[in-house]
Structure formats: C-alpha cells, structure tokens
Length: 376
Ligand SMILES: NC(=O)c1ccc[n+]([C@@H]2O[C@H](COP(=O)([O-])OP(=O)(O)OC[C@H]3O[C@@H](n4cnc5c(N)ncnc54)[C@H](OP(=O)(O)O)[C@@H]3O)[C@@H](O)[C@H]2O)c1
Image (cartoon, rainbow, N blue to C red; front, side):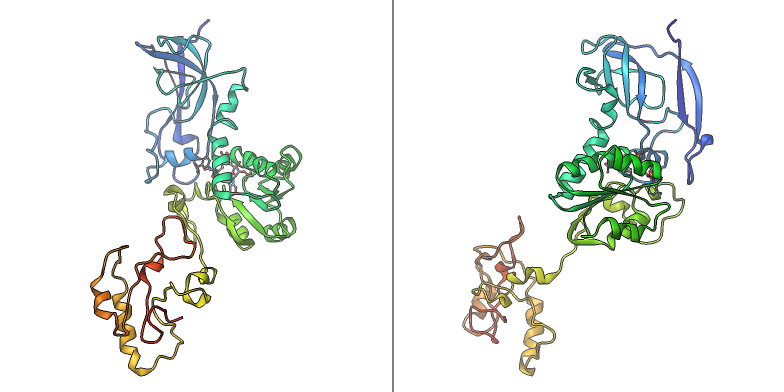
C-alpha cells in the first residue's frame, strides 16, 4: 500500500554547543501533491555532513542558516514516485537537496539525474559528490602533492579525508592519517591504503607524527583544526601547503577556542602564506645582477653620513608615489643631473610573481651611488 504521509525531522531550536534531540522534532504530514513541472520523490539516502552544524546556527556564514520549523537541510538521493516533468519518469534516481524527510515534492529544476549503471547511486553523496569534489580540489589545487612528499590528512576515515588520502597515494606520496579510534585507523591503513594512521585520542600526537613523518610534512590536508593542526604545524617543511578544509573540532564550541580563529580564513577562501625576504634577494641590487634594481630605504645598520640623513628620510617619504609605465614624472625631471632621486620606467628584468608589475618600476638611484645604480 502506498505511503500516505510524509515523515519529517524539523529544526525546532538552534543548539548551543553540542546539538541534541531537543533541537529537533519528528512530525508526520500529509503526502505532498505535485503541480505542473513538479516531481514527487522518495528519499533513499540522506547525507549527514559536518557543515550542517553551521546551518543550525544563526552566526554569519557563507550560507543561509536552516529555517526553524522546517525540515533540516541536507543532500539526498531519491527515487521519483510521480512526475509532471518531461525530464523525469517514475523510478528515476535523482540527486537533490530535500533535507531530513522521507518524501519531497517540487520543481524538477535543481534535481540531477543519476545513472545506477554508472555507479551505486549513494556515491553521488560521497566520492562522486560534494565530499569527493572537496577532496579533489583541496588536495590537488591547494595541496599540490608531488611524488615522494609526505601528506598528512586529519579525519582520515571520514568522507573527505578518505578520498583525499587515496588521491595522494595515486600521486606517489607517503600518506599519514589521523583518526579517533584504533578501528578507524585499521580501516585507514588496511582498506584505504594509507602508509600510517595515528589515533589522535590515545597516541602522543607529537611523537607519533615524528615517527610517521621522518622527513617532515609537505602537505597537511586539514579537516579538523585545533590540536591536530597545532601539532602538525610544528612539523611542516619549507614551502609546505595546507588546504584548510574544515575545523570540525570547533563546530560545537560555545566559546571561541583559544588562539587565532581560522574560520574567517576558511569561509572567505583567504590566502595566508609566509614569506622570507631572503628568498627574494635576487630582486634587489644586492644580488650583484646588473642595475635595474630597488632599495626603498637604506638598511638601518648602514651608517649614513650625517649630511645624508635628512635626505634619506625625505626619500622614503617620496617613494610611495605611484609610477606608471611610460609616464614622465615631475620628480624625474627635477632630480635628474642633481645626483638626487631618480626613477626608472623600465620593467624589472627579474622574474616576478604573475600579475606583479615589480619594484623595477620604482628604481632608485642616489648620491650614494653612481647615477642609474641603486644603493646596493
Ligand atoms: N570546505 C568545504 O567546502 C568542505 C566541504 C566538505 C567538508 N568540509 C569539512 O571537511 C571536514 C570533514 O568532512 P567529512 O564530510 O569528511 O566529515 P565526516 O565524514 O562526517 O567525518 C568527520 C569526522 O571528523 C572527526 N572529528 C570530529 N570531531 C573531531 C575533533 N574534535 N577533532 C578531530 N577530529 C574530529 C570524526 O572522526 P574521528 O573519529 O576520526 O575523530 C568524524 O567522524 C569537516 O570539517 C567538514 O566541515 C569542508
């Protein structure tokens, strides 16, 4: 006998800290009816994902919060029961976002057809869906693993981490996971093929990372933040890459965890990257390369003759003025031939990051060095 009611789990209240049953309500409602172009479908698979904790709260985020009194949101794989849309027929499998309910009715728009001959339909919520795409983009675009490097992946037994680790193995990396039980660790090494797995709840995390990563850590695929991130950061190599995927260790915190809060970095897709100036020495006159070079101000330790100190201060004040390629500047004319400040409009001959015009556009020469040369 066909089902006549729809069972829904509504978000009743916004949790403080860890959610519990009191935040939800199970209700039965009449089976929804469909209009023109609409589809009635029965939920077969529902994915319960960490991002849902954020949707339960009203805090500003990259997505709208779930509405109180409505079925909790979530991605679903469903089978079409009845269709008024030419795109779908009864029996078809679809990927949708119907939330925590047994049935949903609505426009066919937004549903994606699934082919059960291609892969089990549940894969659309895992490796062939959002978690798989997260792992793929996070690891390959941001992590950029290279053969022989060491990649550490937290929440390694989870939907995203398990896939990221397998991709890193395909790329010839040593892959080390962290997970919250010995059983999960056995799955991570035995079934998924990671080289090692650390139970972060029972092992001495620092010592275990040292043992599992003797050559340091080149890529940390961070799903959790908090203590694991802290321990890994102490062991990263020069030019390590850290895809910041999730901060699940903090999602239920009622108060912000101590230390810098990386959530805005994650949600705003911000770039946080160290620089050490000596890596860029070739971009200064000190490199010994031909003079098309820049020094914005003399080094502090350079003893300047007294007569030049005022000039030096003045020069620093003048430098920030913008210089456009090919555009004559008043200062050029004023200072040329006086042994004062002059500016070159020639581009830097040294390799520069993409899009950067380079300090070469602001070349400096001075009375302390021959015209056309910097202070080098
Ligand atoms: N940036 C994006 O677009 C994006 C997309 C998808 C997912 N994510 C993020 O990726 C992460 C993993 O997602 P998933 O779908 O793989 O999740 P999942 O399959 O539900 O796995 C989550 C796992 O995280 C671990 N965990 C929970 N609390 C923890 C804590 N306090 N410290 C350390 N680990 C903890 C638990 O495993 P253990 O038992 O091993 O601790 C849990 O099973 C989440 O942070 C999620 O928000 C981000």
